[in-house]
Image 1 (cartoon, rainbow, N blue to C red):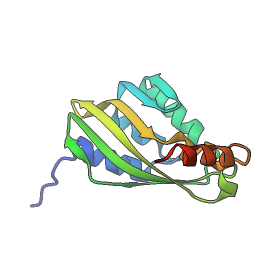
Image 2: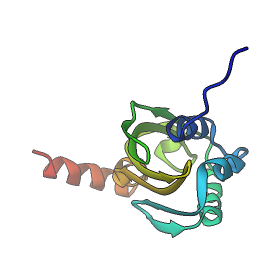
Image 3: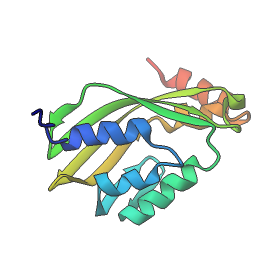
Image 4: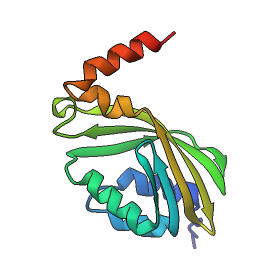
Length: 146
């Protein structure tokens, strides 16, 4: 008889985020602690219910969003997960796919994620993709690069 190896937090994170979407938000309950702290460049929120509501808002008008996960750095209870998100939204980049590189810093306790902080370039995801801000943001980034 074959026995399945129990899924650890790293594997659970990969499974959930590779299948997450507006119709699969209940998966968050199996991965995140009820008192999770989530932060990204747009702000910080506390609690799994607020996190799910935040995700529901983000996925509301998205045509497509998926993640390619890199090799995790470190091991639970504190690790980081590099990723590339491909996002298609009707109001960004004329509805064309936008690729955003980022990394998630994660902490867990008893198999549930208690802290999740995403690091990514908000300009790459948002500011560079809108008609008025895009050219100005790209110009400024070019001027600041070495």
